[in-house]
Amino acid sequence: MGFLAGPLTPVLDALATWTGSFGIAILILTLIVRLLLFPLQVKSMKSAAKMREIQPKLKELQEKYKDNPEELQRRMVALYQQHNMNPLGGCLPTLIQLPVMVSLYVVLVQFAERYANSPELQAAGIAVTFLGINMLEKSFIMGIAAGLTSLLMTFSVPGDPMQRRMMAPMSLLTLYIGTIVPAGVALYISFTNLISALQQYLFKIRSEPAKEA
Image 1 (tube, helix red, strand yellow):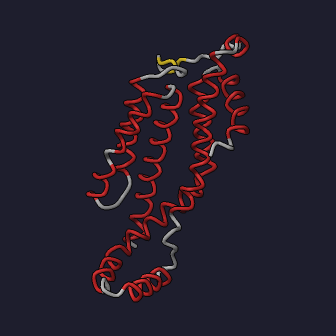
Image 2 (cartoon, rainbow, N blue to C red):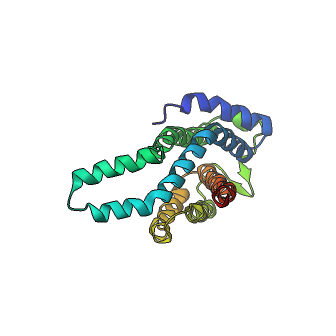
Image 3 (cartoon, rainbow, N blue to C red):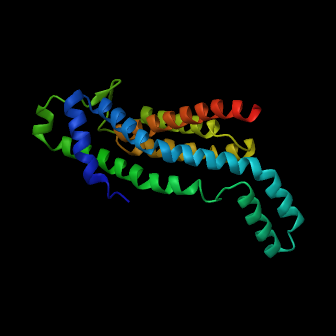
């Protein structure tokens, strides 16, 4: 999944050299990636919003035809066609984003390893500390930040409150991961979560007037 690590590595190197800060370079790189993926993210959010709208009708069909799977399938397909939607429409953008995210993780880990063993990079004057935290070392504080921003992102996603509460424990896994990887990776996770939460908030604001109209 990390096949994009090769092209992204020189980009991070250039950003770190240009800004003189490993932390700022990570933030800029994250912004660039999120901007490139923005159309896919919007498509995913729209698909999820449509799915939430027809969820009550889906439940009615499932209850009505629970003893007739074939008829249930036909009715569900008809409902999707009626609303001009693909039930898998929200999955494809996420699947496309996964290789990019994994590749970014690989790039950040490799950069940390190369910097630790490269006098040339160290001599370039690139600051490896950001907000007082060494981005190349593990940081419990950054792990907590990754976990908290993951929780924020979870509750920023519209939907069933019960479902959100069930997803919340995943933030503990994110927190754990954030403490065992270099702080730079945890910074990337945290900033990505914040951007995702902001996107969800803005999408919600823009969607509400449309519903009222």
